[in-house]
Amino acid sequence: MTIVLIEIALAVGGFGIGTGEFAIMGLLPDVAATYGVSIPQAGYVITAYALGVVIGAPIIAALAARISRRSLLLMLMSIFAIGNILSAVAPDFTTFTALRFVTGLPHGAYFGVAALVAASMAAPHRRARAVGRVMLGLTIATLIGTPIATFLGQMMSWRAAFLLVGGVGLLTVALVWLFQPQDQVQPGASIRRELGALQRPQVWLTLGVAATGFGGMFSIFSYIASTTTETAMMPVAMVSFVLALFGIGMNVGNVIGSRLADISLKGTIGGVMLFNVVVMTVFSLTADVPFMLCLCVFLIGCGFAACPAVQTRLMDVAADAQTLAAASSHSAFNIANALGAWLGGLTIAWGYGYGSTGYVGAALSLVGLAVFSVSVALERKKG
Image (cartoon, rainbow, N blue to C red):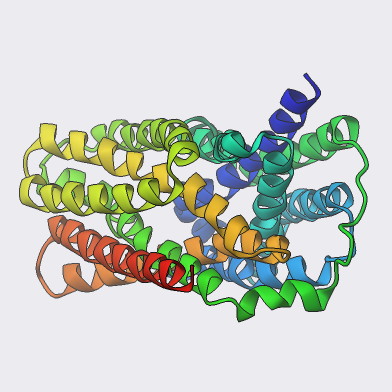
């Protein structure tokens, strides 16, 4: 029961982070209207948050090497909660953007440390499932948290949505304080040892798998609303349904993928990447057919199945520098977000249509599969 309560506490934090990260996308027009900026300008706050994640994860993980995991989790979630509450009362756009950057700093480090805590409490053959249960907070956020926060923001004010996310952050602090037992700093832990992860080629290769392999998901998801209405010619009201299918797929993929990863870690990563290549190609070929669009969006969400496996493999290849490696995976995911959205946007701008984002996704998944193949080949050669 103690382990269950700890995992619930950690998952609640993931729910808050996921809700805060994605809810802003539906509230950009409201933010723009409040501060008197254009919607594209308001989009800078999303970039600022992502930049905070990319920068914050490795730096915090390295600097906090001599801090116990419980204390670090409390510190990270406190920063996240305060950052969201202050975002809700930001007086001008510059302050709001700066606060979104600060709020993004603890994102990756929190998930990395939470994954380490969950894995450390599980039997060796159940580590990926433990990581998956923590990640379930993030995937449930895409299905429940984001729609609720978006609805609240549209009905009341976008500021209320950020107050809600800040409240979830404070709840996480309370739960971790109550249920997570005090732990000791890992023997020999230091900034130098954590930075040692960056000297391991397998760490870089696994991060490369995340940065490219998951880019395909974001290349499609970033433009799925327009693909739904302009390519499949579905009514605007169906966009929420399609987004829900993506969220359901992520949850299904997370549960199934974590179980498969405990059976075969490498097989799950390689298999899911190949699965993504096929599904994303079919997406482009059939994007103008509503039923196939819905089916493919659900299956693309299922591609999240590789996430617990990648996170667990990073722990393995990082040896004694697990905190920095585990935290950096979320920097890689945000790079995938930016890369996928950028490349998908290029193909649309070149006139290939919204359905072409599937081909971009398939290509990125192939790159991720190639990087993973190199990683496995080097491992076998060294062995």
